[in-house]
Length: 409
Image (cartoon, rainbow, N blue to C red; front, side):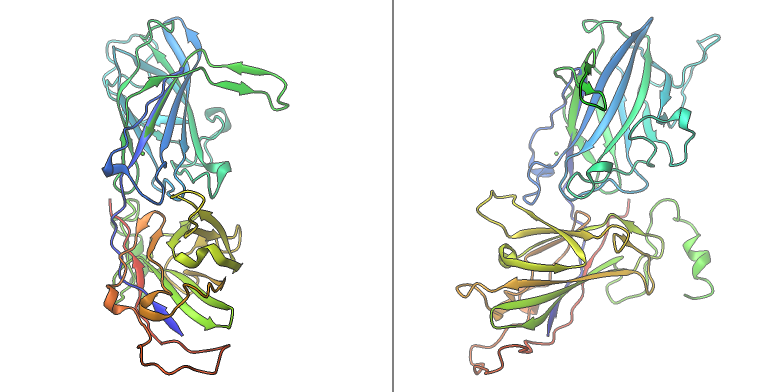
């Protein structure tokens, strides 16, 4: 049966981030072509900064990042958030995160701030952090999944106590030059904007409290193998790729398996060739005109994406089933996940001619796969005689690899 692929390069669009300050501030990123992806036109990361209480020389705020991208996680080694203070603010203390540097705090006698840098960089704490250093949605090593795939883990929060700042909504100055770094090309951040104070509801939903102020911004097997796996690059995410003809860490294989009278069947296999990487919460996005007639799916989760409006349903998002195949193991026998799709034929459009049966675009974890050139797709010649075997018609045996080359930071 027909199978297809091609070697993929990483050409992921730069998304955008927006910052909200709560008495409330909203940072809204402009829609630039650099940050635009037609399959996720409204995707962004929104960062909300809620001032919860005033202190003698400043305030305490809760900062929360929401991943509103449809299929792009923030993956390990996680996010780094930075900004520049508008005045001479310092960070007295933090819960759920920490700065990468303390800076020069020599002018302080007695109590020493957590950070005195003009432009601090914040990182998440690791899982297993002591309970008294945590707040809700913290301590995930900077990993944030998408709302589409894992809404319970689509936000990351920390608490910050700011000193030498204003103590009222009129005297607090909004931080400037927000930056959000993450694996891949990173994010461009818009200007912070004051928004309405965020409301917080009790667990029973009967009482609401609200932030004193809020702001936000948007983002748009050899004996030497183990030593190589543990060698330079282990902690930086640098791939160690199994030797293949394509030398990519991920391969996606699309196999047109069976042709029935009213249906056709496709097998999708995702293979991990990276010895250093287990892909948790991986996802696959593909575009095909027959996705509006997906009848049955085996062993993957599925959600239609409608980036062009409800009238066009040609884009699908797939991901693994929890505790079954949502973890794509590193290179080796367990380093693959696979599923089959059963699709109903549309007699007006269905054909095996000139590569119609293969996807138009494929993303793995948001990285754009390079598709084969048009003349590499299998297709039936016009002079091909009709067949009387309707149920298991072999189409063409064609085996090129569809792989995704992930960005190397």
